[in-house]
Structure formats: C-alpha cells, structure tokens
Length: 412
Image (cartoon, rainbow, N blue to C red):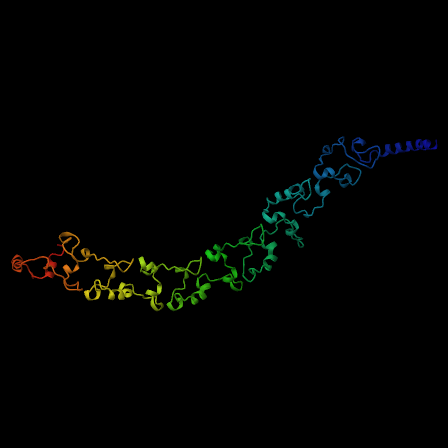
C-alpha cells in the first residue's frame, strides 16, 4: 500500500517535469520506440522506424554501426554538424581542403582503393611498390612552414636519398651517379636495378652483357670510362702470342678481328688488307705467309710464298723454261697441282682455230726441252724456203723464221 502511494506521489512530479523541459533531444520529432525499448531505456537500437537519411546525413558504411554518442556528443541532436572534420581529426592540417570524400569513403576512413584513385590525379601517380607504401613514409612530418601534402617534391631523391648513399654495388656516390633513380630502378623493386648502357654511348653486346660492372669501372669510376677496346683489353693484347700482337704491331682496335662473343677464335677479314683469301689460302696458317710475325708490308705476289714450289716443279721445269712467276697464269688458289695454261688467251691459239687437234703435246712446237720461250712453226708447216721467199717477196722485214711467222700471223 505504501509502494503504490509513493508511486502515485512521484508520478505527477515526473510528468510535470517533462512538461517543463520537453524531449532531451530537443526538437527531434521521432517516437521514442524508434530507438528505445521498454525493458532498457539506455540500450539504444535504431530500427526501421527511424530514417536517419531524412536528417540530411545518410548512414552508410562504417557510419551505420557507429555509436550515436560518437557524433551526437550532446543529447540535443539539433544542429549537429555533418562536415567530416567535425568528427574526424584533419591530419592533413587543412592542406587538402574539407572534402574528405576526395580520398576517404564511409566504408573505411583508410580506404586504400579510394585513396589510390585520388592519388592518380596528382602530379605523382602511384605504381608498383608505391601503391602499398604507407602514406607517412613519403608525407613525413614537415618542418615549420613547409607543407606536408601539397607541393611535395616528386623526384626520386626526395625519398630515396638514403638508399642512394648506402648503395655499394656499385657505389653511387663515388661513381657520380645521377640522382634520377628511374634510369636504373623500377617502381616494382628497388633492388635488381637495370641500366640501359646504350644511353652511355657504349652498347653492351655478347660477353660484355654478363661482365660485372667493376671489371670495366674500376674503383667505382663511371664518368669518363674509356670506350676503346684497349681500355679494358690491353693485357689480352699484350699476352697474345698466336700471333704476337705486340711484336707484329697489330692495331689496338680489337674489333678488326675479335667479336664481343669471345676473345678467342678471332677472325680477320683479310679482304680489308687488299689481298682476299680464297681457296686453300683460307685455311693456311697465318705464320706460313707472315713469317717471323711480320704482318705489315707483307708482299702479295705469288712468288713471295711460292718461290720454292716454282723452283721444284719439273713437269714442266718452270725455272729453265723461263715461266713467269705470276702463278695465276696457270694455277688457282684451290691447289698447286693440276695447273692449266690458257695458251689461246695469252699467246697463240692452239686449242681453237686452225691449230685445234693439230698437235700432240707441248714438244710438238717447243722442241727445245724445258725451254718454252723457244718454239717452231716449221716442224709442222713444211714450207719450202724458196717458195716462201718468193711468196713474201717485197714484204718488209720478212725472214724465214718461226718468230717472224708469229709476228705476222699472231692469231692464225
């Protein structure tokens, strides 16, 4: 009885107080049941009866699960600001403006997809490892008066100066490397740098591509490195004995004979010397013609190398026959044996014309053994001297001699 009486006594006062103050939420005109339940006044659960989107601030993403008191610090909801900065601390210090949606979404304040898309519209689009790099790694705390996000430097050195100074293979600082890291490095991975050596005016080919940088760039010297062959290959030049380059005074322009594939197996284009190698000459060892390692001033006449062959030939005997030492008259570069003499073109037609098949062998005309300078026409042409003298009467210079026959009848 006392409990009921006490409740009745309190009820008018409570109602009276509510009439004086109204709703704790100010002018919010929403039924209490939209958020509160009868079993617990403080257990707030927003149900379908309350449409937050009608307030001008739709709750999406993480906002839908946020605590009401997180934004509505006071129970009076009237005039609650809707600007992002009213709830979220601006870590950008006002440099990027108040429209957080340019980089952030309600799904997550740190939404990588949205932030990346926003960054692609700047002077420094993100690619490779930059996509996963923490923002603060580049946007470090700025000194007094310097902007942290706007007008930041976009050159590699601004972030990678420490990497540049630490690099030892090769040493970038002592090597005087440019600070434009993109010449060698990619945004995918800082290591495994690749330098386009063509840009240096010395394209790497063959074995040069696999050669360690420090073999040519001694003591981390890159600027002014010589590009001549002898700049790196002088020891190879000096140590070569077959043939001896130093003694033979070979040029130090190695590409005349060597390629970048291998130092060994050099091939010299002999045509450049004015004496093309053909036939057996192509497989003849160099020192057979270039005796005593002599290369400059080597004679190019046949007899210079083939005098011994000339002297020892007996069929026919070249020396006593007075054969010319211009071997190409009869011989080819394929082999010394099997020579053929073009008698028709150089001397008298015996293979064509009237004399074809009219002789048996060389001795038919060249009756003096091994003396091919001497020849006779009269052994075959049984001319009567008296008759020939009468026939040639009045011919200036006529003599009854074979040489005179040839003089007047050179192509008979």
